[in-house]
Image (cartoon, rainbow, N blue to C red; front, side, top):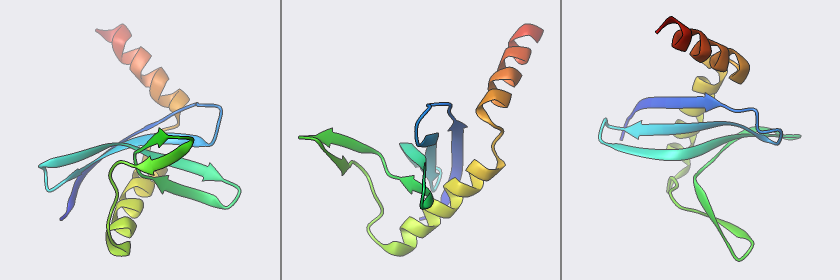
Length: 99
């Protein structure tokens, strides 16, 4: 299974979440709400999850370390290349003014 697209949006959440991504596989299947989280130990990618009884459970996740590494690398690459949230918002405002 190959990653064919990564769409990422940086956010100013005021907390540890720095971006939200959608990853498309083989141009046929997409997983939304993959999060980029920054902690004291570094940046990591969190799979989509749902809270139940005060505990978070993954909704979708890779089943082997190789797949997790592939997804993590693709999302962090998109994160590194994406404009900051303020820059993206400003560009959106400017393009709306031109229309």
